[in-house]
Amino acid sequence: MINRKNMTLMIMVGILASLISFTPVSATDWPMFHQNADHTGFLIQPGDFSPTLWNFNAGNAIQSSPVIKDKTIFFGSNNGILYAVNMEDGTKSWEYKTEGAVISSPCIVNETVYFGSSDGYIYAVSSSDGVLKWKYKTGGPVESSPAVANDTVYVGSDDKSIYAIKEDGTLLWNYATGKSVKSSPTIFNGTLYSGSDDGVIYALGAQNGSLIWHYTTGDKVKSSPAVFNGTLFVGSDDGKLYALNTTAGTVNWTYSMGKSVSASPTIDEFNYDLYIGAGNGQFSCLDTRTGTHKWSVQTGASIQSTAALSGNRTVFGADNGKFYVLNKYSGNVEWTYEPGYYLFNAPIISSPANYGNMTYFGSNDGYLYAVNIEKQSSTTSIWAYYLGGIIIIFVLVIIAARIMRNRFKKN
Image (cartoon, rainbow, N blue to C red; front, side, top):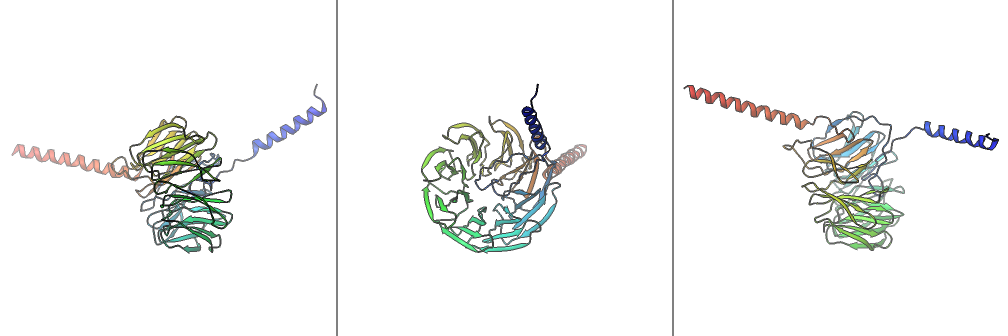
């Protein structure tokens, strides 16, 4: 027999269950390079998006990594344009033209898109229509991708400096390093972490730019740091991946990748796994706690693209023009996509962004691709038509040669 106390408990549980079951699942955005300010590159799959396959022609190489907000995807191109494209159908919403290549990946906060250009400016434009809010001039090209925290934009420049710019476009502070800063800053617990081409990893106070610690590697640090569980992970052109204590800058462990590491680490926070590629074509999975090697895949081409995670998969591009989808636990290759069909392959340097079962990435062939990694499907690439045209011409040439040969025989 159920007493009054148990009955009340059952009613409360029932009400709670009904609220949970009818609460809509909202989509999660990918608002900056590597998804968040910690640069862990992980995104829980949203359930409110209907996948659509499409390609978008930017007209020039896309090395900028796409970001996502409110079902609009933002990315730059080497033609100097920042694009906003509707994710539902791949149509352009707006564009903003700069005077240099936009290699920097955008960052979106509070309806504002922040990005750098090779013309030396850091731009802030409206995410709804691309109208300029402000721009700040540095002393060199800006290829580093901005990170925003506490109403401040943090970004590196080839003028050898790291900048902290307030959201109204005024300078808060800048810090001079020894060489260009292409690494994208990571912000964690009030500290900024960034690499520099001088081979040094810097930890600076995010509020005032004061040096907390620095660690010197054996070569340029173009890789952008990722922070997880009190450890900073970052690659170097000396061929090593470094795991440093975020507080003291001391080494927890290092792992030799065999060649330069310009890609950034991707962290699976649930499984303590780290994924990263290197210049020798090796893509590896390591244990974040010890640096223990779990598995590797050899692509045969340099990997500059930073991987992203989606469900049980990790995805990335390579300089051979292939886009890879791997099982993140075993490293087994589930699917590769070649937009250029071997003949027209172009390096894929742009790092992918995931949204549900869809992945979006740019290529040096000038196209942004929307592919479904669950169904292993994509829309027909424009390069397929070029390849078809070449095959037709080749067949026609053979036919014409045979006709001419037969005529000569008759004569």
